[in-house]
Image (cartoon, rainbow, N blue to C red; front, top):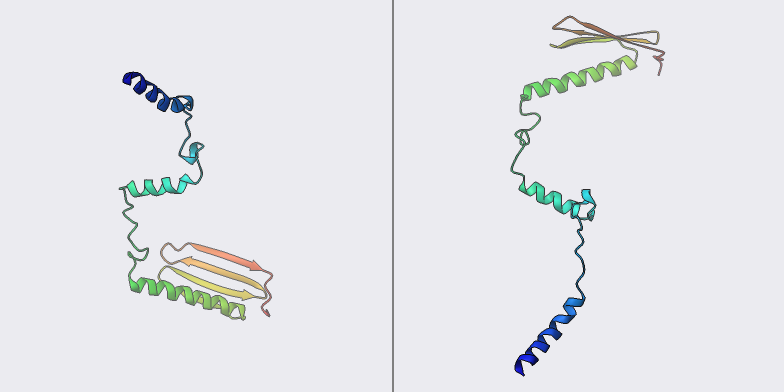
Length: 136
């Protein structure tokens, strides 16, 4: 009798689970394959945390290969070229000579001619802008 009671109690306790079983349905996790878009940031952070490869240039400053004197020279050349172009706007001509190039700017009756000569190779580039009003 105890066996039958134990058997009946066991069947009664298992029966709700037998009736609620369904088939398994695959749901992707990765949003690239149809998963939830909110998983993307989580997956990217996990992948980044596991990445052991590092960029060898990541810790270097873009100025690490340039000395302070070279940076100062570049800044000064840029400032002088800017001042030269401002002076041309006021009706003055000018020339800027550096180690790398020679810039000659001439304004004749509203026609601005900029001649750039490469000091090393001797190549010459000329830019002509027509229609400038020197009075403005």
